[in-house]
Length: 122
Image (tube, rainbow, N blue to C red; front, side):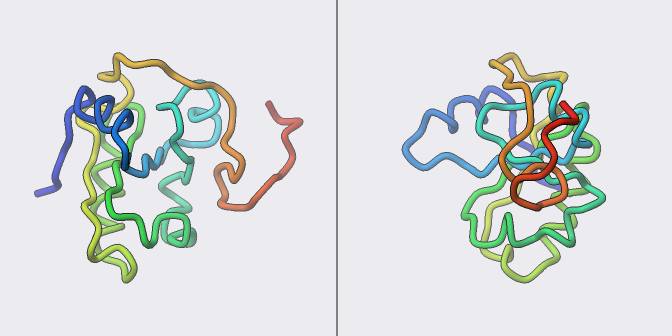
């Protein structure tokens, strides 16, 4: 069974001294429409090829629109070297259950795991 974390708990942890790494596994287009502040976007389809963006984190919370793909992401991340010591959880209910603020746009290393990119798409 995959560990899940309540959206309210994620919100509280984001204000803590050592917040978790929030990895949004939505598509780039979904991420640009709105995501948890400070989260990074690594679409589920690209997750395995971009584990370097997650490796070394002590606490990872995966997020997606409804909480289904993020459960798959937890399973994938838990199976790879570099994440074996991390606490990895899926945000229960996904963004549909998130009552906190949302950021719009892309993170600096958006979607495909590459820095920069063509921001004309927005």
